[in-house]
Image (cartoon, rainbow, N blue to C red; front, top):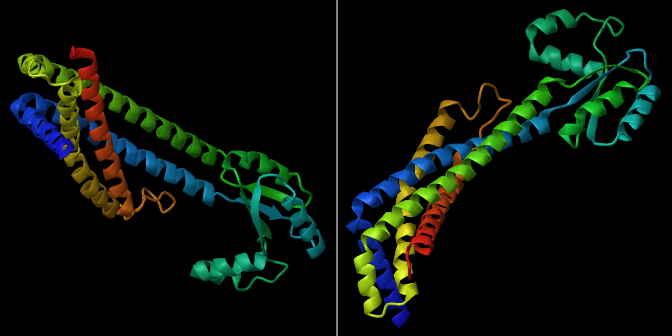
Length: 299
């Protein structure tokens, strides 16, 4: 019971400290709010860029076009050679007849042109569609496939794929660095704000010492105060994240520019981000207060 009373008193004192120094508390809350909004944008962008990269890696396919003069035995040999290449994840043979049928089904124009083609007149080539285990090795795999006898052409969007992955990687790294930098800056600003609060309450601290308050009892209210400031500062960013991301997702129908670049589904994504923001706000607030107490409160 005594422990509960002490905890209750410390929480009460922390709330008193927040409202007693309202202007300073408001400055800290505003600082946390602005920072967490930027952090939320950076985290959302970072997660979506990572998702874009995974989708690109999953969708990129090497297409190997085969000479139309090859017989079934030679096609089986090429299949065996592809299976022996390192970093090949899976592959599929698509006959020219299947490709022709799919094209005819997809367009009346194609159907009108192709329906009168005989087997000999059909210029479409048999293909192998190959996926790689590691997107970074796609160029090397494509070169090996191109060297196989009977393969006339290899395509996978070369150049564009590497550039796209590179851009996504740079954006992801910038977002991560930005989040870390913003958290550190916020902790520093809160620390300075709490330091000002502590300096303005030196008389109160001196009285607490005189009546026998322990160092821990003096420190704890300030740390809880930082926790409260962090929690209050995270409210607006959490609301903005939940409603803002849902609005963006609905406006763009879950994708950017094309179905190739899909956004992460809002549920449970926004709630996970909200918990992260709350955690960052609380931890940064507590750390800032602890740092101020440790460095500037002589107890």
